[in-house]
Length: 353
Image (cartoon, rainbow, N blue to C red; front, side, top):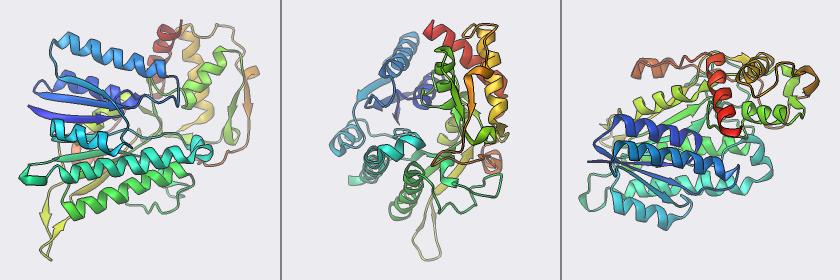
């Protein structure tokens, strides 16, 4: 029996990944961890956990185990590693959001820096006393690390030394920390830079979800940079497919010319590679919300939109170069924006009405 840890298991990506793992891996114990904080409506996180429990019941086994806890709690992390002896660790737990990092920086240091350090230390000590230890650490990075990179599409070969938000700085720090542990302790690790993930049961702080809430309530939505932003929107199923494939292939351990380990370390972009203009995005969203019955057919969309300047910490464009992902894993995200927004709108109608 393999043992897999998924942190942030009640989160958007985390619960979607666990659902996939339960359907695909029938010889693995899947342990999920989440602190269920109130950064956004906890009811949505509880709903995701209910979906996971129902899925586990359907498969009629005990392969799914959930533990409520915070990865910033070193003792909690140490204890759970000791109990389950993980082969694979996928760290998705993090304080998300660019704008929130401007007003609540301490949350990002605790979760994204201290928490990730605790995960790295637990992976390091998984090899103690001759144990086989963690075979692969996969962790979430972000397209935010590219900052205001003028070169597009964004490549993992580009330098990312100029973050424009604390959130981005913590994600870049994760990559640096993982590289150091890969070099010092020969821990195979792979970082994944996600590009604007969206879909059903997503995060309410993301634009598509927040726009929907405001439009439904009859409030105005603000379109930043006067609508001249472009985003590489990536559907959740494509993200999960990418993570699933990456999990199965850890960077190889090799010995360098100096007789010391070369760091078994890699970073990949996971994005749709088709940036969409923000005005096109919101127009498509409102069409699909009308189609799903979330908004009325005669909804006055223009009266509920306002073009405003760029906000602090934001960037004009995100655009993923996924050639490395295609080369190493034979996969390229491809879900069209309209299809993804249609699935979200249908889910929203079912969940909130």
